[in-house]
Length: 183
Image (cartoon, rainbow, N blue to C red; front, side, top):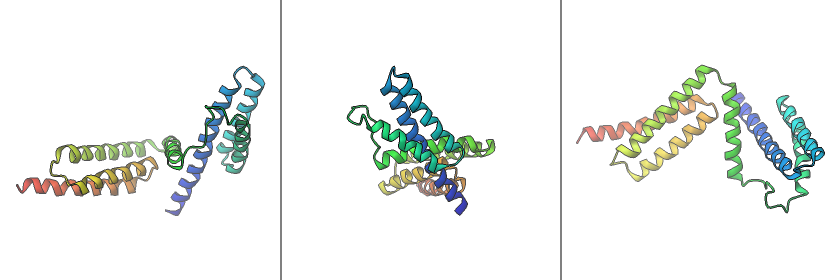
């Protein structure tokens, strides 16, 4: 389990740097417009950063990112300057990058398993939220919370955690099915 957590942390760090390199490279390309030399220099720095990430050299990638940030900060007063996102926004954006990275590394069977779990969670969620009229407010909150946890687990490739959350969701559904049958 510790290896999986370390691997996820490393993936999260790589994706965090990759996302910021992409944002700054795009901004600088736009900012420099017709200045081909400046565009080429910024694109070269971004390419070196991405290359370092491919080689798992996060420190070198961070140095290239710092060069891009310094270059971009020269125009920080521009209304299109890509400020650092707030913490929750950054996490959401990086999570999307992590999902993309993991998707490329997953075996076809694992992707199919993930898709099956996701479908099961979505169907159970919809049945509970839209077809269980007696669903209490607390259970409704639990359904949303459990679905969020399951989705995060799936996005991060942690199938066992996703299955546990799916089973918790099914337990809530079973309670309501039993209550409906008892009427």
